[in-house]
Image 1: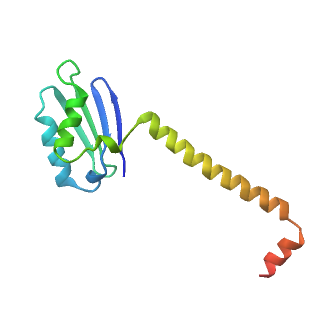
Image 2 (image 1 turned 135 degrees about the vertical axis):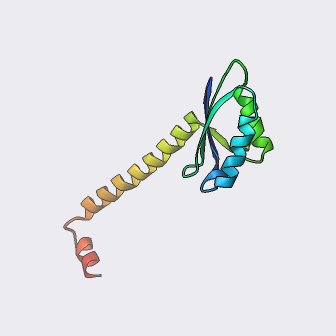
Image 3 (image 1 turned 180 degrees about the vertical axis):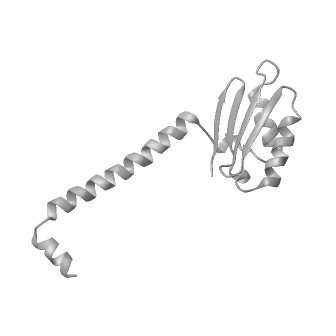
Length: 123
C-alpha cells in the first residue's frame, strides 16, 4: 500500500496506512514530530491514516519531518506518491470504469431486440 505525500512550505500532509485505526501508533508519530524544533501543530486522522503537520519552513525542512517518520518505521519514501501521481492514478481508474460502462451500454444497445436478447431472457 502506498503513502500519499503533499507538501507546501509550512504544511505537510502524509497518509500512512499503518495509522488507520491505530491510536497508539498515531500518538507515537505525534511525539516524534513534536520533538522537532519548528513544528507548530499536528493533526492526525486515524480513519484515513492522515497526518497534517504545520511547521515553520524557516526553521525546519519537510524532509526532516519525513526522515523522523522513516526512522520511526512509519514512512517508506519508495512507496510514496505525490499529489500529481495520486490524481493521475485516480483519473486512470475513473477512465477505465467509464470505458467499461460505455462498452456495456453499447453492447446492450447492439443486441437490444435481437434474437440473442430473447435467448438471454430465456436462460
